[in-house]
Image (tube, rainbow, N blue to C red; front, side, top):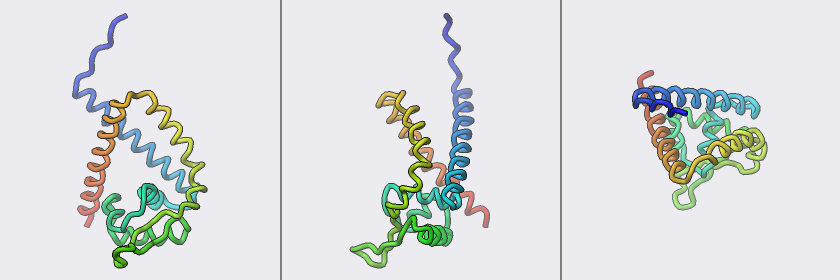
Length: 158
């Protein structure tokens, strides 16, 4: 049995770019379907995703999403009306306001996301710890780069 030819760096980069586009597109479609199921828009749902790891200020949410602070204010208002999030004053500095997920609201969303969580866990289980660390490094850097590109794209619109 012969070994398949090794792909060139150019071919690998092109294949990874296509794969990233595919994963990103599927993620956007999943987000849209999940948001519809929850009765919200996908931008608001993505903001909920940023809040799952802990409370954030509106400025941090704006930076993470590439949205303006005005747009984030609208998102937070909608999330509060839907009972998904609430604003809380910082105990040390009452001028600072954090947005926090309402934990009980996540019970409605959990069943929608569980199949995707299981599918991701199954794929990741195939990798060794050092490979997982490399994947995490790539994903973190790709996310940071994506946020910068989105923010830049939004600035050029004006």
